[in-house]
Image (cartoon, rainbow, N blue to C red; front, side, top):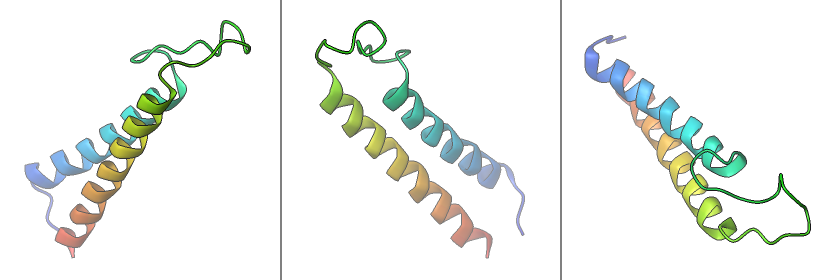
Length: 72
């Protein structure tokens, strides 16, 4: 196994992208949504949050896959 700065950075960024996808999808830190206030209100940013969460999680998984392939 090669443990150099590039591989450590790639592993760190893959985790960051997965965590960022979770934060976008399920919290109000980056994109506000109103589920906590009232369940009867409409979530205006649902499509944006889902699109960004899926995009970031897929990219994070891709970076992790590329990292694992480079370690072999």
